[in-house]
Every structure is written in C-alpha cells, then in structure tokens.
Amino acid sequence: MKHLQKRIERHIETIATFTSTPGKGTSRLTYSKEDLQARNYIKEQMKASGLNVKEDGLGNIFGKLVGSNPDAPSVMIGSHFDSVPNGGSYDGPAGVVAALEVANLFYQHNIKPTYPLEIVALVEEEGSRFGGGLMGSRGITGQLSEEEFSQLKDKNGISPKEAMQSIGLDPSLPKVRDPKTMKAFLELHIEQGPVLEEKNIPIGVVESIVGQAEYHITVKGQAGHAGTTPMNKRSDALVTATKIISELPSFAIAEGNGTVLTTGKLNVFPNGANVIPDKVIFTVDIRSGKEENVQHVIEQMQQSVEAHQGNGIEIDIEEKLYVQPKALSETIRSLLKEKSENKDISYCSINSGAGHDAMVFSDFTEVGMLFIPSKAGLSHCPEEWSDAADIANAVEIFYQTAKQLTEAEE
Image (tube, rainbow, N blue to C red; front, side):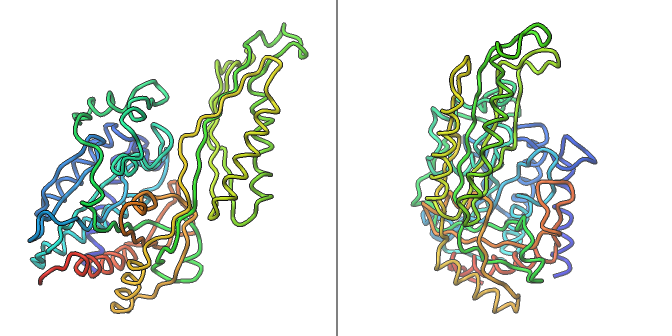
C-alpha cells in the first residue's frame, strides 16, 4: 500500500506542474499548452501499463486493455483532467490517477479480463474555457451535437476545433460512441465538502448526484459618457445586471432542500472607469437534488429578467447546461460496498452536491462513484488537498470491483 501511495503522490505532483499559474494553484484550460503536457503524461502512463491508447474527436483519452472477448462492452474507469482557474491539484486528476493505478495493478498481476478494461481521461468537465461543463462526457454520449460543438467559443472567440488543432488534436475523429460499448463507468472524485472528514470516514459511496442548470445572461444597454449623461437618461447594463443578481439568491433560499444558486462569472463591456456599461454577461448556476426545485428557480429567474426589460435594456437568457438529478446504479453501489468491507475499509453512503461526468454516463450505462475526504472541505482553490492513502483505498476497491465486472482471470 505504501508503494501505491508513493506512486499516486508522484502522479498528482507531476500533473500539478502542468499549470499556467505556478505558485497560484492549478490553471489548466482545455486544449491549452498545459492540457497537452498533461495528456502526454497520461498517455505515457497508459502505455506503460500495456494499454492501447487513442483519442476521440473531442480530445478525450482512452487506454484500453482488450479482453478475451474484444467485442464486449468496456468497464470504464476515469475522470477529467482540466481545472478551474487557480484551482487545486486533486479535482479531476485524483480520479484519473486512481484509474491509471487500477490499470497498473491489472498489468503487474497479469490480469486477463474477459470484458475490456478502459481507462478514460475526459476534457472540459469544468466548463472553464467553453462554458456549460461536462463537454467530454456529453460529447461521448451524444448529448452535445456536432452543431453545438462547432458553435462553442471561448472568451477570445476561439472555437474548440481551432484550439484542438493548435495542440495537434483531430476534431474530425468520431466523438459519439455506441452505449452498447460501455458495460459500466466508475469514477473517483474528491468530496469537495466537509462530510467525510468530519465523520473521519475514508470512503463515500455516492448514492445520487444533484441536478444542475447553467445559464448565461446578457444584459444590453447603451454606452455613454460617465460625466455628461444624466442619471435619468441612462440605460446602464451593469446597474440592471446587479439588480437581477441581487434578487437571485432569495429564490434558492425559498426553495430549501439544499437548493443553491451561484453567480460566478461577470464580464462588463467596455469595462472603462468613465464609460457607462453597454453590455454585461453573467453566469447563473442552479443545483438541487430535486428537479422541481431547479425548475422553480429557473421560472423565478426568468420572471426577474422579464421585469427588468425595457427603458433601453434588452436581456437574453441562454441555457448552457441542464442535467437532471441522477441516482447511481444500485448494483454497482452494492459492489463497491462489498469490496470496501472485504478490504476492511470503512465507508458511508453520501450524496453529491457537485456535478460530475458520472451523472452524464448514468443515462447510458451502469455507474458507480466513490468520494474521498477533502481537507477542510476545500476545493476549487490552491488549498485543495486529499490524502494519497485515501486515493489508494479507492484504487483497491475499484481494482476488486473491476476484476469482477470484467470477469477477469488471475
């Protein structure tokens, strides 16, 4: 176990160096130079464990150990390797590293699976570059159409296709895969909350994942001189945006049931100290374990927007992401608990308040997910940290689970 922990620590530390903000957390945007560095490392590790490596038309990475029945569906294990700006080293990469180490255990023990084992490293889960999030998994499952993919742009107007080509990826490769090629999907993730640490329990078996909606709201007004335009003659996009933003939290609070709402990004144009803003774009992230709560908040948000239209102000709402709450596979959950008990690793059931690629795959295959504790419950910040010993526990559980699901021979 100590050897496994050391390997995990080395992986995490190496991937953490692939950042555009050294010393200020991990910033690894999809299809960036840092993305290329991380993907090359991940592919090297896959090959070292005897996996056949390929990438799809989204840049997702697959390392496959072909089983004795090569046409059988794969048991997939993985997570994402992009980050939020100035984030941590564990959100995403911990799951990729765990998957790599499961493959390494298959390799070291010369395990021969019947069903293929497939390690997956997914792109743009966070949505930090192109918005919406979960792009890699939504593309694989056909929930992101080719037209929608081609219309995406980053803040500099660069499309995913252009960005992919800039690091040598081929966007013309197939993106969607047949659900019949997927037997199961397993994902490890840091909890990003305080529950497991407070309970002093190293493993959380995820029962369900919250529903999530993301919207981009554009408020258009009229630019003008800050000194010569009377207050009653202004169509100030920023003032209107702040009125809407200030109303939004109360909608989530009124719903209860753990419903949350966040305005996390705001861009002001032309962004001059002495110019009345003529355009503001901001994001709204809504999450709840109950879909009716999400829907009700959306309705109230739309009513608020409509109430602020007029007097030179135009407002557009664009839905970037909508995912229903998801209960994960009862069969896989039972397997994960059984393997935890067999290894004498304590666990508890837990629900996820964050969205994950696992929730996308759950509509197409059997999905299981494990959480490990996050120090102080912190995530999406440089202080994010999880213990390699906990990741090693998850690797052992996934290894035993994968052997059973692939019907492996030792």
